[in-house]
Length: 525
Image 1 (cartoon, one colour):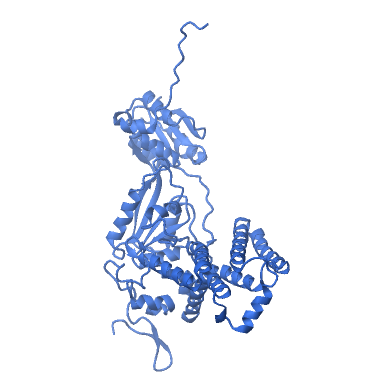
Image 2 (cartoon, rainbow, N blue to C red):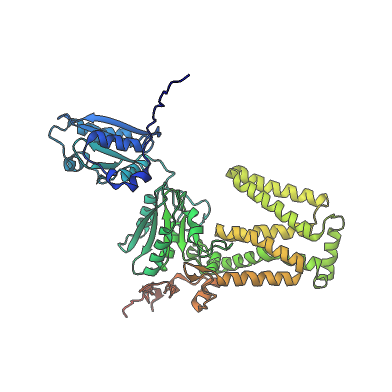
């Protein structure tokens, strides 16, 4: 029997939120034991956070806090610990920061919560006896994958650089392409726990200030604990998050971002994500590739028409075929109709069920080949599709004609350079197929009308998402169907440009001289 034995109280670390509610306890006081214990309490239960106490030559204690996985400990020993131990004169905060550490990343800080945050991001914290401020210095050893080719937007012509997971390197890559003081970057910190840095990039004098402020306000309204990456923010930033069609343009290519910035748009980037979001985004731009601006105009124009036809085939071809084969036989030429009937003679499923099953099987093969390693995935995709299709036709489970229709519809969508648009179209074709199966030709027409109305009603950061279709703009219409020579792309979209709508000086194209030689036309003449 226990006679009134008291339970031993377990000391728990004070949560950061409690410290934020009590500002008087959230500062470095200058009392070494108190400050050391207060900061240590915030860092308990984290085995990768290390603490070390050293002494200066005059006997003062110096505490170092750092993250073993994010700090280069060799540089920490050489540039911080050894100089402090060898310094003979009395140390002050200014001496420690300016003469001993000599790091451009060194800063002074009083807030305990701020110190805990910078520790988690890879900085070392130096706490010295007698000082009412701590010093933070960044000595990173985080290894990223560097600058590589884009996996989702690879091109044959043009730059092959793509963004990585390091935000500072991504911003530096943009600076490398655009060395101008007018390239501005505003940073917003999101995530109550993750404290992730999100950057808004724009060109001053080209992008409208109201667009930049709108992006900043939308980001600041996001109140969530962790931000895994900028792609996670898409639904928080879109005007209509439940719409299937994309309203922001994700990209990993710096040249595509620079092209958008030069038109007066903004780019949103975040730490830990190679994806960059371009806003506003217009749906007709789905047919445009970054490679178009490095190709000859006639070649790029042909490819745009090819993508436009491919998008139409992918969305409507299965539905139109079901309409013709099941409801409107008279539209099909007799010879073709007899061939279709002969191919379906032993197929046990109705045409509608056959189309749905084949589309689902095709998407399963695509998903499987995407998730597998690249070398294996390509083999699985090609061999799997051939074996499944041929075996199903030989077993009379599907007809050869339906196999061709579904294969053409499934492959055509991948001519589009935008992965987000590809995903939307893969789902839309089921919607069109469903209405066509129920209502025939009227269902196909109603599906087209519904998609059109939905697209016209969409907005991207307040701008119409189907520009230049609505509102109508002749220059924009031409740019949808034709790739003009770069020498004719003289103006930015008029409602995006802030002040300077003109982007190309007149008369800079070389013209043949009278003697047959090449001479450049003087803009001033």
